[in-house]
Image (cartoon, rainbow, N blue to C red; front, side, top):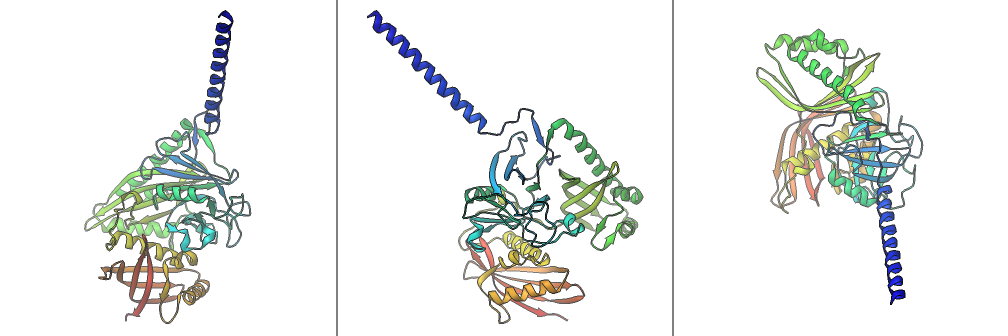
Length: 442
């Protein structure tokens, strides 16, 4: 009995040691499989992320990783995906250089990959490349997307896009908010202690508040001191912008400017201050999304470019599920904005993705229409399209809508105005152009 007791004790001790060993090793494996952040550093690009989208997307080209961060935890990524970027190293400079751009971008559209072809996998998420900084620097090319793939992910295996596994791009598409989720792409992603970020964050916040105060106070000389001499907005350089603002200051007795929900993003010497702006004067009231692009001139940060979008854009999380035969004007307006943007940017792939395969117009089918548009894109350096007097009508047949508007088209020195009528058909959750007619107006 004594011998049996000793054997039982030793067996129990051995069993305990084995259980402890496997438990400890399993726990260790769980820990090392996740990103460790012992120093508690955060991405330097997320300078002041206070509101708006719940997720941010960071691409480290050198490590071939896409990292998703949640706003409530900047210490550890929420998701890490393997990715493939352009065949050639370095930031994109021109069309067909097979490089992935570097900078601060935003998603502009969501599409099913099947609409573009099998090589793009499950989803396609276009970016706003080239952004206003890229255009200022003379960078070319277009059609930079995040997309899925039906083949194995390999490093540097795209023509400039960011490719992910299908399950990853599907997950990403579900959590991003168009025009709001920041996408920072870099050769490497820098991480620094949070306290070092706070000083620069406060500096930029103070600059934006002083800029707002000078504008509202009609102190135009002080207001213009926040702008780089290299600033340009459309055709207006620094002096023309100053004269324009002085004219408005004289025209209105009182100007009120509000800045709300500001976020700050940074990469490679450029800071984007993105916020909701409300501008009010006597008889005029506008609300929209403002982005200020700042660069450092010696020691001071100056505004080198800015954009303002007055049109409301839907957030993915707030879209109400549609009935089979119902439609949302918000969705159609967002679709038209994407179509117009692709047209103006001469992004033929994104533009043609807006059209149904059975499309016909002016005696042309879908293939002939693409050749026609591609020819015009190559002929003109700059295209602008203005839409006004928009009317949307649901058709009794269901799943279809008729859209009419006044269209002003500008291409270099060419001008035309007319009434456009578009027949839209819904394919799943997305709209496509089935027919298009344009009649000139005198």
